[in-house]
Image 1: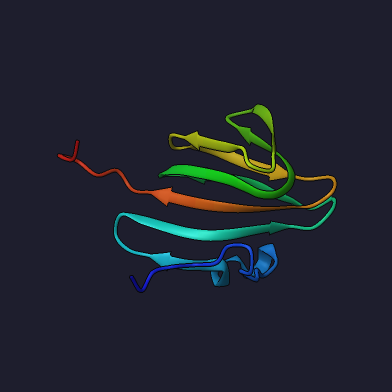
Image 2: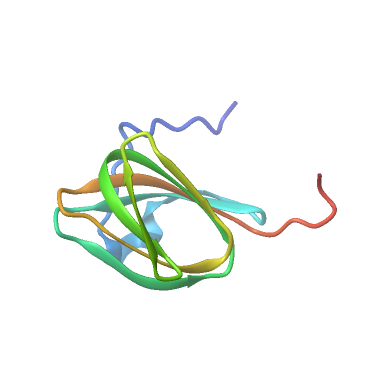
Length: 106
């Protein structure tokens, strides 16, 4: 059991250094912490993979293909490949999981 991560204690870098926020990655998926300071946003990104966003703290507005939803702490969004952006007024911390398409698996 070597892949146990304490998400409450996980420190994160700002958006410009987001590659440092990846804490596990293999061919099937990539996991990262996403930290947004009050008033911060992440611009549109054309995600080629399925994505799960889980809000660890705060509130965030996530826009998927020009449709916006507000997520609060404890809420989860699962999306197919899409154009995604996000912003927050008060700050937010999320877990993001990108999942590659796996064929032949049920």
